[in-house]
Length: 353
Image 1 (cartoon, one colour):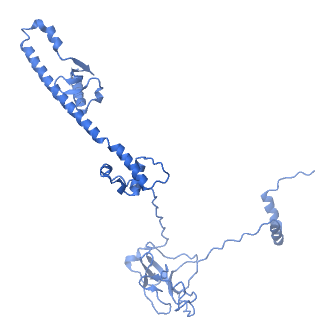
Image 2 (cartoon, one colour; image 1 turned 90 degrees about the horizontal axis):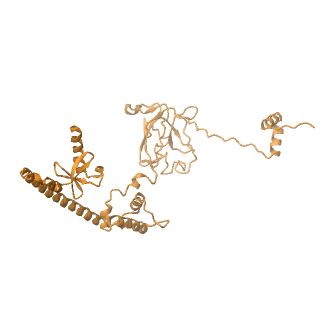
Image 3 (cartoon, one colour; image 1 turned 90 degrees about the vertical axis):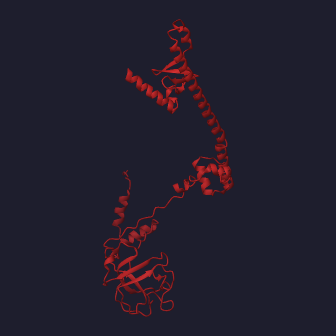
C-alpha cells in the first residue's frame, strides 16, 4: 500500500499554478471561491491651466494647487491660511442654473464660497480677471485665506512661509471629562461657613459631586439626584463641625488651667527661694536642725542626667524656675518651650563633663 503524505498549502499553490487560466477559473468556482476585486485607488485629478472656456459647463473659476505627477502640491505653506503656486481653472461641472453647478451655488460651501463675496468668490472663468492673488473668508472658520497664483510675484513678508514639505497637523489633546479642574472645583469654598449659613443646597451638582468624591462620602442610592447629594454633604458637615465649639472651649479651658498652674508654680518657686534665703541667714544658728530642713526641701528628679525640681507632678527647671513638663511623660512629648529648656540643659551638662 502506497504511503500518503500531507498535502500542504504550498503543494496546492504549486499545483494550481500548473493549470491553465480556464482550469483555474473552473476549479475556483467548484471550490466555492471567487476572485476578490482589487481595491481601486482614487487618483487625484490633474488640472491643466490655460484651457479654453467651455460655456456649456459651470462657469465658476476655482483655484487649485499645482501638483506633481503623484498629485501632490509642488509648494506647501507653513500657514494654513496662506496658499502658494495655485492655478486658475474652470469648474466644468454640469450647469444647474445661472451658469453655475449645484455645488458652486451652495452659500456655505467649504471651499467655493465666501462670507463677503458669496458664491463663486473667485469670479467666472471668462471674466478676464488676472490678479496676483485672490482672497476668500471661510464661512466656517471665519478666517481669511489668501491664494497666490503661479507665476505672480509673492510679497516678501510671506515668502518665508513657503515649504517643500507638507506641514504635519498636530492632533488636539482631548480633555477627559473627569479632569482635575472638575475634581478640584470645591476647594475654593468655605464649607464651614456654607454649612453655618445653610447654603449647601445652593451649590451646583458638579461642586457637590467634587466635594463628595474628595471626602469619600458614600451615598446609598445608585443614581443620586441633587437632593441626595445635598443631604449627604450636610450630614458630613454636621458631623464634622457640630462639636467644634466644644473642642475649642475645652482647649481654652486647658490653656487657662495651664496658665493657672504656671502662676502657682511661680508663686511656689518664689516662696522656695525666700525660704532658702531665710535658711541661709540662720544656717549657723540652726546646725542641729539640718535633718528637719532636709525634710522640707523640694524633691528633685534626674531626667537624662539633668536634675529638676518636682512640683505637682511637673519637672521644674532649678535655675529659672520654669515648668518644663510632666515627669511621667517622655521629654520628646513635652511642649516646645519645655523641650528647648531641656535641650539647653543637656548642652550645658555635656560642656561641663
